[in-house]
Structures are given as C-alpha cells and as structure tokens.
Length: 526
Ligand code: CA
View 1 (cartoon, rainbow, N blue to C red):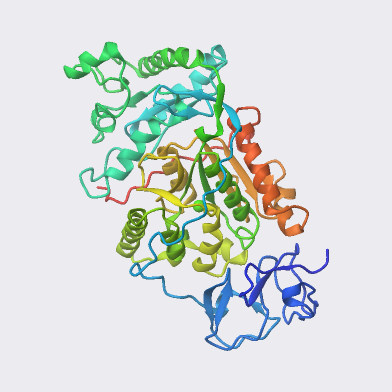
View 2: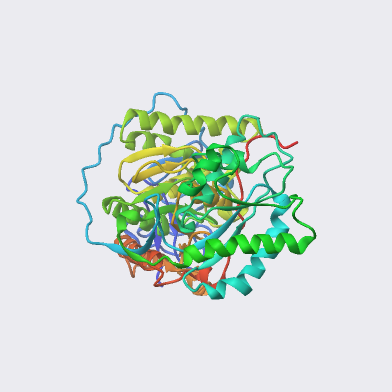
C-alpha cells in the first residue's frame, strides 16, 4: 500500500497516517493535502503529521477545530504527538448557540422491517429473555447458582426463550440511599427490569434486611400489574410482582431458596415461551451507540459510518441514543446548535454542567477520560477524542435529552447523558430501553452485554483481521479506500435488522461474552 494520510477538514494543518505499521522517516507523501511532503520522523499508524510548519503557540487543527496548541515549533513532516500539544480550555457553558441549525427535513425511510417481540407496554424486544432482578448484591451468589440450574434444567424445555439473565449489581445496601444522586442507581435498576428484551416479566430476588427494599425498587405504578393482583396491591398485601425473599422464615436450608427461585422462574418461562416474533417496522428499533478502546481511526471510519447509520435510523422513525458526556463535552456548541428547540439545548447544558460539577467534586476534569491506549492509538487528548466520538450522533436534530438512568421519552435522536465508561454507559442505555447496541473500537475490546445484542465495529482492517471472530463489521475498509462511509453505514443498517430479527447473532452473543452491569452511583457509600 502506498503512503496514505487522512485529513478530515480542508482547514486541518495535520493529517493522520493510515498505513498499517505507520510510515518511516523519509517517506514522501502523495495525498493531495500533503503532496511531496517528506516525513521528518517515523509516524505510527493513526498518529498525526504536521502538514505545514507550526510555530510555538499555533493552533493545531483537526476536524477543522483546534485540538491543541503547539508546545514548541513543529516543522512540516514532523510527528505531532501528545507531548507537543497544549490542550485548550473546555468551552464555557454560557453564550452557546441554541437550536440555531435546522437540518433540512430528511426524506422518510420506509419499508424496512424486522421480526421482533411485541410487548404489552408498546415496546418491542429483539430477544426473548427471562431477567432476574435483584435488590442487593448479597443475593447475587444464590441467584447465580439458581440461574445455572435454570439454564441446564428448565431452559431446554422452553425453546422460544433465548436466555436467562441474572441482573446482579453492587448496589442495594451499604449506601447512602437518601443522598442526592442515589436516585440514579435506583431508577437505573428499576428501568433495566422493564427493558423491552425481558418481555414484561418481572421477577425479583431480595434478601430481606437491605436498604433497597423491593417496594422501593419497584413501587406501584412502575411496572404493569395483572388485574388479579391489583386489588391485593391496593390493599398493601401484595407487591404486584413475584419476589423471592431469602430471609423468609419459609426457607429452611439453601436448597429451599434455590427451589423457590426455580419455581418462580418456571411460571415466567412458560409465559415467555408462548411468545412469537412478528414483523414490525424498523421504527421499533431502540439503538444505543457507543465507542470504547478508541484510536485516531474511530473518528475517521467507524464513528462516521455509525453517524450515517444514525441518520438512516432517524429517517426510519426509530429511536437512537448517543451518550458519553466527557466525550461530547468539547463539542457542546455543536450539540446545542443542533438541538431541536432552545429547551432541548438547555437540557444538554444542564447535563454537561451537572457532570462538570461531579468531576470537580472528585478533583478531576474531562481530561481524565483519555487512556494510555487512546494516546498510543494517536488520540492526543480529549478534544481530539471528542471530535471523533461525537460524529456517531449523525447530522439530524437532537430531539430529546434524558438524565442518567431515565427511560427514553420519544423516538428520534436522544442525548442519553451517561459517563463514557463502557460498562456504565451500556448499563444506562439498557435502562433507557435499548434493544440493540452498536459499539465501535479501534484498539479492540471484546465488550458484550447479556441483555441486548452488541454489534461491534472495528475502526481498522488490521484489528478486523486479527479479531475476525469478535468484530461484526470492518469499517477499516473506509481508510483502505475499498468502501465508503455510505457503504459501511448501509451495511450496518441491514445487519441491525438481521440481528434484531434473530436471523444473525453477533460474535459477542456467539461466544456469550457478557460484561457486568455497572451502576452509576454518584452518591456516597457508607
Ligand atoms: Ca465508551
């Protein structure tokens, strides 16, 4: 392959090296934006080369914006690594453009469908899973023991049920449950238990003495209650859902607890097993997009392809959410200007301000986001990373904003405020009602979730080759020049419909790679 560098915007004064293994010093560049330029240093793959001489203090431009300022004079052809960049201050949250961009109404995308499970609450599942909700970590071992037995002894009897999943977590006791912020982990657990992929079947395992009592986790009105139980719920003699309480006097010995969980699970499995997939419009997709283990290609290949696909989903009337507050913070002006209304722009600012204060309380700021792997992959700082991350949100108007742990309120493009941590973001998107997850990675992560299928997209062909049985889509073809962003975006859209329909399994599903649910708890523990 001849030397290849990629520039994202005509204003850019740096470009990244695309070639596997990087390019040696002395290489003569051939791309239009760098024609004849000779590399002064060896530049690793994904890293930046100066296209012009940059004087100390000059703005280094990528994506057409300053990602930093030159710490000293940098000559054209030199490797612009993180130590040569001084990071800009975060954009203040005042005087932002509010709902100033009105994207032209896009043509509706009609006629696309998938096979999903319709739920009583109007949502649609892409999988048919029995989830076992838990009030507290204390019961996780017992629940897991029961789940292993349910999987080996009961699940084979119910062929229409895809899986049994223990919703274990570390919350529920030993926490300041009345403190500001405690509502976030509580509502997250509540909303996860009614994720569309769980078919409206709520069963709970509790301990008895924990702070997060079952009635506090799932108060009346938070889940659908059958008619026959509603009177008892009104009288306060029934919770309205099945709860196995391990400290109940009725349990004598460990096996009594296990049998009780299994017997309860059986009634739910029977109902889930009656369900069948039916044809539903693509507008029933609820897609969460995320990136993790990012490199400089994330914002060049995979994330722009996701952004193209996000636009397709919005045109199809579906729900799409993007997240990762510390990775969009530096692009706040882009987001507020794309908000559908000034009120939605205000909600974006509210979430960013809340997170700024949260980080400040921990003596950190957004720069704590970037990892050694990001930097080794060519991302010098959070500004550069943010510009590459935000493109996952596509180009349509942002029509809603939800706080961490809340459920989606509307279709279209939503900002679902979450930390960028892969597991916490994924957990909060599950709570928001996600039924399909798209995850891009450049360095490589084997991420997966038990509750929702995860389509993983590689940013580079080298990663896609090495991790051929972990990556579902290779967006590195965009850098290779063999495919366009449009090609890969459509490939992703069609794969989504296949995976949502259960016609295809993702690699993470194939290997059963499931990361833990990780709650976002900004409140103290005791
Ligand atoms: Ca992430």
